[in-house]
Image (cartoon, rainbow, N blue to C red; front, side):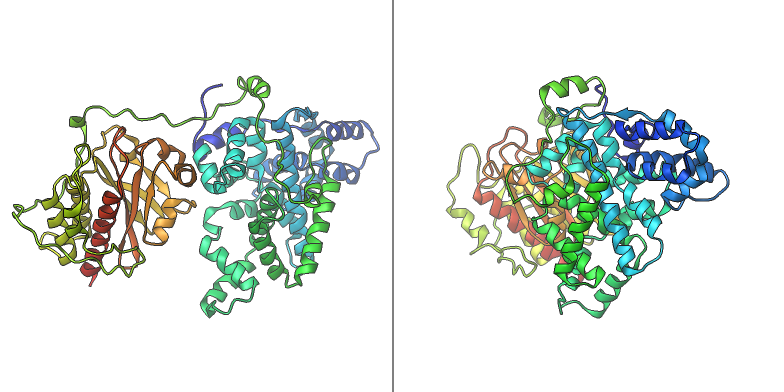
Length: 576
């Protein structure tokens, strides 16, 4: 199978009606019970609740019946009792079984993530009981199905999930960025789409919405509150208290700990989440850790597939560099290639001749003067490191290279820098300054390709606005990116700075950019820098020497940074 879904809508469409197998032993036990005329719903209840996948099938069936009369299934017990023996038997006949093949990574990871979901649900149910809060069974159901996207993806898109694991465990890529690169969206978004399509849990849907997910700042504040940090303001504490009281919060929190601990109980992220759980339970840290371990052990005892590593078994292992098997073997990959879609890899863009390039329309420049006085360096209070000395005057000390001159047009560079610093009658809007910056980087410094991405602070989106040197067919022309996803773009949005991607640091930095972006920049490196309007990020500029250009020199890096900082200063003056 070659066609691969990409993005939330296509993944939900691909997965929504695909079968999810139940452990062979559980399905056989249910079949034996149904053949017994004296079996009770209570006996069937215990068997069904022993397997999360079987629970999902029963809840889906019950929800379909309830939706016809405008009612909702609020718990697994509610679903089983409302189905009755005939409907339970009908679900059993439609459900496929799966006996684990110990050599199959895809099957073991499928059962592993079902176990992770069961672990999360067990934790959430325990916390609700301890806090004496309502909606315990509804919380259990929502928490159990929160990770349903992982189940289906390991069963029907193992190539994609294996690639994500490689990014997480080997390249240390952030989980959201890794999933977005491979799937075109997050697994959380896929789970939300599936739950919404099936109509099985309003609480699960609310919990899976990205709008209800805390951002990096809020997560940091949650941890600060857990540690009793006095720097939190009264307003911060009110916002955090409101979040913690939300009905969906324990659903999210339980899945955070289960999914994070799945990558290591001793890692920093796991320990921070434990601090937040301790604060949520208003308990002592030692008692909280003990209860977390007890709940993990109970979950592993209630749901275990022989041949897989149970969460509780991993919990008691000593820290080690050894990891579970997450890569598909060549033999398994060959067997699955006809059944599952392969991972789409971005194709490198071949640049045609230079005369086909697109160019930004910028304000008309007046005639360049023969001599331009050197401008002063920028007092960069925004956080961007200033240059030492006068960069424009220092250019005279640089030796000219035949392959790569210091300036393509020094007079143009000097003029634009001066106008950015001192202001100009043609610069009446922020876009004029951004366009002038592109001109300075392209015509003055000589970067062959320059692109300006605008930041939308309302939608947290990054989108290409102006470009020079790229063909109309180049993907960067229509580039869009979600700034909620941890990446270098998100870092540049949060704080002024310049990032120089070069051969020496590519291996470290490229995993922090969207995978599609890897093949767009020059193999010899490119520059990214954020532009701020006061304290607000408004743009990120990209510059490189085209597909086959030379490496960027320190000289050009410094001048690029200087000119971009001048644009930020010009915007700051404009705001006044």
